[in-house]
Length: 385
Image (tube, rainbow, N blue to C red; front, side, top):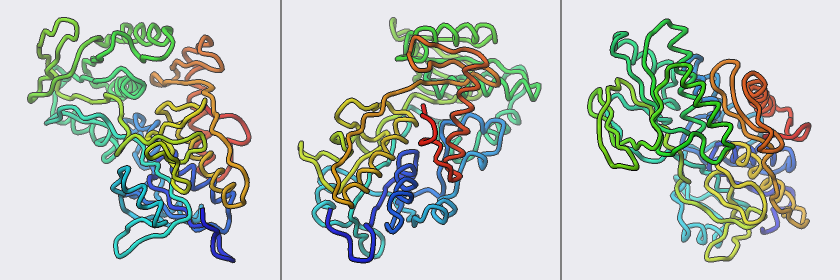
């Protein structure tokens, strides 16, 4: 990093306003009060994606925070722009110390790529919705439209994806329908042979038992092949047998992939290009994999911790101090299953919490993030998951 102009702090540009990008900006605001901070993101606001399922019963605005308001509070300027990123452009930006913006270029002392991940592509169509639809319209609008065009005897909903997002939407949707006294048959379709792959087996057993008790149809080892009108096309993974089922609404949550690419980084968060670190270009969040022993999962807790670590290392570079390696270890993982129910692990994966205790921890974690966005550094006061 070149020495900042005398009397001025460094110019830091962050691409991506998700968990990692926002964590980086907010942390930098606290560490480098004279820094000039810029956010590049094509959207108008930050969305708390871990709460997106709650929009089935609450306004979308409750889970978004406008970048304009956050920028005033944390001293950054928002540019509604997306960067076209590849390995060659990263090297060019490092050499030039600038990125292209409408009308010219934006010079930087440090650039952070925190563009996150996007839902994996599956065949879409009429009566099909995914994360981007909920992000744009909110769940209440999707649900209202579904109820208006269907009658009680023909309400079949298919949720595709047995990960945390799909399961949370499934149970939130069930609860939303019950509160409206609207009948409907729910089913979960998953490519894997068990739910929440990668989590303890107890997670699968708890969720499967609850689905059975709620009358939710579970189709494991089943692939989604598309939607035709009010029919979902499926395929049994082991046998290859193809068939169709009624589905007036199909929700796709097949997982996410790094966007626009997966960036390798060293243990300090500096982007690697051709095996060499770019000293002034960093990566953070779901689009990055750090070397070393720190958590690299595509989760909000890993993204937030990477963003904070990168911010700290930029501050250390500015002061001429040695950089610190990212070494955050996962402390737990929780999934909500509607009101007052959940499943998760805390401390050790063998320490599984179920029911109300798990739900309470999940809600506490969301409140911790809310307080942090409001200006209280809760992640220094107590550990985060």
